[in-house]
Structures are given as structure tokens and as C-alpha cells.
Length: 109
Image 1 (tube, rainbow, N blue to C red):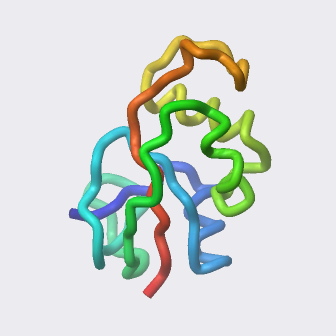
Image 2 (cartoon, helix red, strand yellow):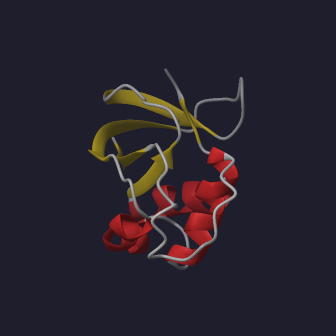
Image 3 (cartoon, helix red, strand yellow):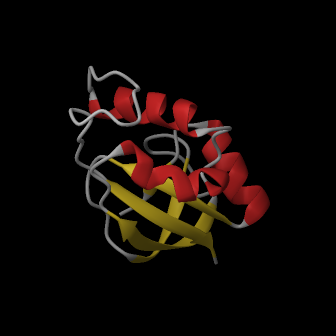
């Protein structure tokens, strides 16, 4: 199943650095696959996908920010909350900011 990258900053980071950490709302198969930037889009590259973490709180993502394609945790969380349709504050210590999702390490092949 192809992995879509809608955020150009994340895709650009992957293509430039050959790896990226990406948050997904739904579980994705691990192993070898390919990526695109839109539905029914052309293949951009082959990748290897590994599940890294099933984060429950915002601060769990902090160690991965530098390889996420986002400038800081705040902007990454904004994108995640938009993806997951959460109406949560961006308070990093917020106990109500529990969200379901999956953090994947994606590497170019």
C-alpha cells in the first residue's frame, strides 16, 4: 500500500536526507513500499517503512522532531491535530492531548 506525503516539507526532508519520521493516523504496513504526494499520483521513490512508536502524549515526539521535516514540535503537533481532527490545546503537558496514531521511520531505498 503506497504511503502518501501531503506535506511538502516532510517529503522534501525525506528526499534530501534519505529518511524521515512521519506520524500517521492509521496503521501502515511495514516493509518495502513506495511513496507519492497525491492520491493516484506517480511513484516518487521506493522506501522502507518501520513502526517506531505509538505515541500517546505530545512530548513523546520530541526526540524525533529534528528528522520530521517540521521546524519544531509546535508546528508538527498542529499538523497532527489537523490530521486527527483533535480540538486539543497545544499545551505539551496536557493530559487531555492523548491521541491515537503511529510514528513511522521511513528511509529511501
